[in-house]
Image (cartoon, rainbow, N blue to C red; front, side, top):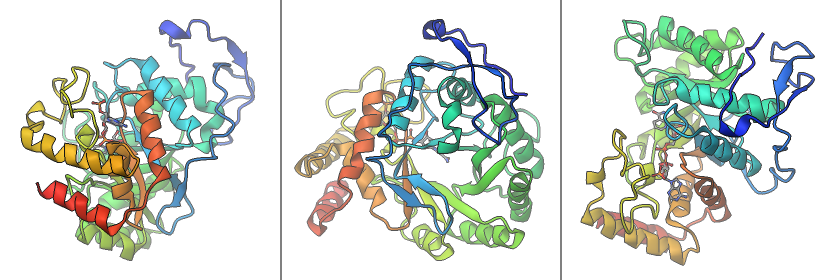
Length: 368
Ligand code: NDP
């Protein structure tokens, strides 16, 4: 039986404990388990009216065109109320896909724990409407079995992730990065195994280049568990997927979900006037160093911002539309630090097309 989350944060005191029927055949609950449910969160009834959904490669699974990742702002150091508000708003806007990894935090694992708490409070009854993913590949625990791509690490890590989130399966489990020392057959057969065990419905790869993607897809196909998707970095400022990986995905008929499509905030209006103290570049210990906010960058970002304004979009919305213009793209995987950012990004789907002139103007702005 799953543990009942005994969370007593500031705003949870008033949440009553009510008895509910288990809504999900996958969950090993007794029918009369006591579960904290917030009656103030019935999901919006119109949540499927605006978001669009794209088929992932040739699979049967559709993902929302905009997905939400929990790498930042959902860790133990962050305010869980803010994370909860963002997840609720995202779901209300039709964002059905939430992306995690074993090591998201900080500290590592805490994003999955926070997500598990919020899931228990707000989303249990919507579990079958959600696509929840997690990954293993980066450093998670000490010793030789706490990172990379061995069967030993991947299977233990997924077991830990399921416990932290209070789930008995995830929708997508990823090999987070290719491992130069482990045979790809071993990594892929661990992915195949978790599907056969019922711990994941689909499997994916992340940060695999074109050649590694082709090989992973081939091995998984032979094993009988198709590769669903590759999760890779792609934005106007990070274009390594062009053109080989885009072609490999199209050829192998898998999906592509693009992470950091806003270049961690650099393709938004966040830094146009200053480096806010609460921004990613303004904080210590993040992957976005304040040194990257140079005069040259600002000149480029302001030109891009003007092109976006002429399109009737924010810069963030245009940056998302730009990665989504490829037919092979399944979803743009954003991060957010506020409800307003989630709303702004979700509205990107209102204009996903570009004229040749706009694309040329963007290239010119990027070239400086
Ligand atoms: P983004 O490029 O979307 O950057 C997110 C940041 O941009 C936010 O934290 C916020 O910055 C800013 N932002 C977002 N929306 C807006 C807006 N509308 N207006 C102004 N600023 C905005 O993505 P991330 O780098 O956060 O990555 C997204 C997800 O991708 C991760 O959560 C994770 O799930 C996945 N990922 C996967 C990796 C992998 O190896 N597979 C690696 C990295 C990420 P601020 O916080 O400053 O407000």
